[in-house]
Amino acid sequence: MKIITIEEHVLNPAVAQASAATAQQISPYWAAAFSPDSGLPYTPSRDVLCDLDAGRIADMDKHGITVQVLSNLSTQQVPADVAADVVRSANDTLADAVRRHPDRFAAFAALPTTVPYSAAAELDRCVGDLGFVGTMIMGRTEGEFLSAERFDPILRAAARLEVPIYLHPALPTRVTSADNYEAGLDPIVAARFASAAWGWHSETGIHFLNLVLSGVFDRYPGLQVILGHWGEMIPWFLDRLDEALPRRATKLERTIGDYVRQNSYYTPAGMFTEPHLRFCVDVLGTDRMIYSVDYPFVGNDGAVDFLLRSGLPEDVKEDIAHRNAERLLRGLG
Image 1 (cartoon, helix red, strand yellow):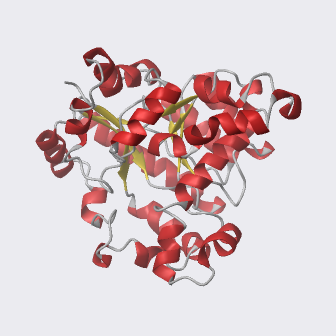
Image 2: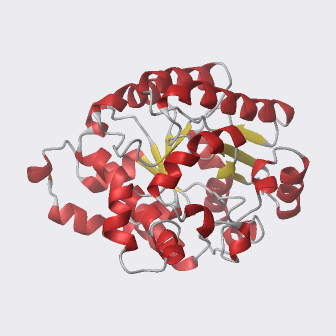
């Protein structure tokens, strides 16, 4: 079975260096909480994160992954004065990897969101010139949601180009982290609570719902957003959201459930858990489920087996494994 996975990460050293000061301000314990020496999950080595050739492909071959859609780790923390140049170079590095291995890799554009007009231009370049299949944006930029007016050029470009935005988790803002996650806890526990254990997913779900409630999808009805980790908590509260925020309150053109089902796709992002799969199939169906591993934070081992033994019809497995991705991400297939 052909397997395309779409949340597969790459560390660009220049991006990491440029982002370090901002990340430290948000959470001084981030590096320690995700150090490979911590003994905790989701801590790949720097070499594995940076690899774009033989090692990555060998691991894909070993575990049955046909194509990875690559994405640079967060460029949302790169300061505005260097963001455009740093991010452009990072995208060029991914483009080189795709050119070397066109049957194994595709790419999402990283964007310098601290300079929104440059970000929109970079998305145009990546899609039009480099053949990228969308963009991945990791969390808020300078504390603001993508619904903020300053980011409209990015949303407008994605809608015009008909490419999706993969809305990926990132660290909570410094204020949110201090208020909600840190008080009275061990620093490493707090950093993990604010990120992989809970905060990443809650914050990303809130970010998407903010896009809905601010009317982004009424302005851009064709815009598509991808949510990892089984929809970042949203499916579990869809009925509650529609009950508590009906159209007479939101003044939107559709219900929240309609936007979720018509303007978002969802992926497991390495959470290979059968109860989540069953619930999301019941609530959202499978037409908008796309496969992802979250490599290398989650290993490829077991990913294909989870889908094969899911009990879903064979035709549905094929949709999830590659056809849904090929329909959404033009240029794949």
